[in-house]
Length: 638
Image (cartoon, rainbow, N blue to C red; front, top):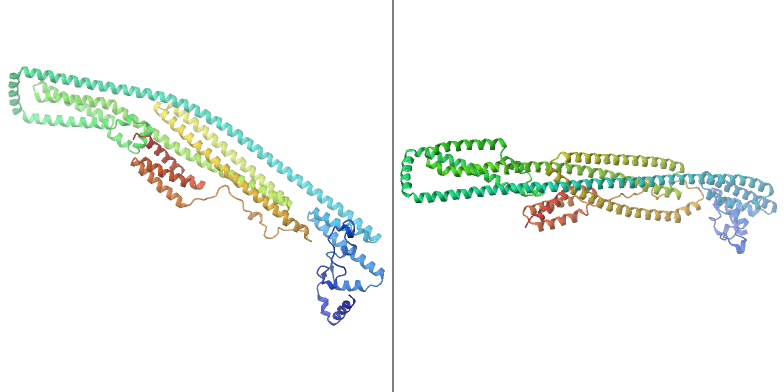
């Protein structure tokens, strides 16, 4: 070692620029310049006592050691000088530790400060009595300061726990209120369904009674027509017998009629033309009324499906009440004139008038009975169609409100997950400062309370609207006709059941999706926590300076990926494909090909199940109407 020191002194004298070499630590010096061998690991009880480092090694640990100090320490031959230099060096090292302890306490890192304080406790036995007393007094002050920091951190942790408990209490109270409101809503729905079922049953009975009366009326009309035909056939038979017995008289009458026909031929031709025109008009009116008689036999759904958009044309074909009355009066006046002419001896009128009178009587009965029933049924169908359109608009509005509520719930769940994630980051010490976290926590709680309040107000308004609409529907049911009430109650009950079933299915899928996403988020949070505990926290504890910023590469708050409640996995091509397949189904239904329509409908539903919630909302009502059309087509007789 001596010859190395001599060589170093010669080199330094010849090269003054060596003074510019930066100081090096004991760990950075080459082996030739080390005073002692490499230090043993801490806690070597066999060689160095109960877990204490050697005295000289403690003095040199992690301390900048210039080459001049090393040469000066080696050149000291006097024991007192060496002892004084050693004590100065120990004081310098103790002051460094004190500064680091104060810095750690100021940055709110009590664990690191206590670790450094434990290292500082090894220095007093190595110092003189004077310096030992000064160091012990400073250590007392540092200990009190570290304890205050620990108490402050503990107080903040307690305050944070209290805030978390209050937030959890608010969440539980909110969930309890939601359960109570949901039960109340179910009870109201059950009462409404019960009332509608009773109304439906009563209206069915009234409808059956009306149909029975109509069948009885038709039967009576048929009996009267049969009686008239039998009387006519009997009269014809008696006339033939009479003519057979009075053959000669018939010949004479024939000659007389031929003479009269020759004289009055032109007048008979005009009368015959008028009779034929009136008979043609009466027959056409009877056929028109009978062609639309199927409207009375078909139910409401069949009429709306088969005659969609044709009710106005049918009503125009049947003519108004004034036109029919005027037509009947004109024909009656003509018949009275013909009766007077027949009384004067016109045999042509005697042959043609009975047939014309029968047509006129049949047309009058059908115009006053069957035609009025058809017109009343058409008016009833138009009212039902208007109510169906109104209900569809109401269902669409409810669906939009439900969608807004689900969106608010998703946003609230996202904010809750963000709050939990930030609390996890705060616990492991990687988030922002405590003061800023407290401000953000209070602001987040205020936003959550505002969101909850707004959501409750919307739900309350929706409940009031539903109750008001139910009251209006009940008031309308009280003043409607009996047939209108029956059909409306049936349609409303079916639509409400289908809507509730759809809502329950959507709620189940949404809860499953939320549970799956929350599980993924918890696994990611646990993985991030494990990574922080294994790598980042030890790195912070080993650092010589306190960590005042988030390590590079770790995601900041604004870059933390928070998964949304649903993923948009649909494509515009799927919507266009569904639109084409809907046209195929309706074309098949128009051709009464039920099986082809069913296969195309299954293909539509397979594509629909893979759409996102937003795209499903765009085609839901169309597919629902298509389903009703297909079911009505399947119920038709083959």
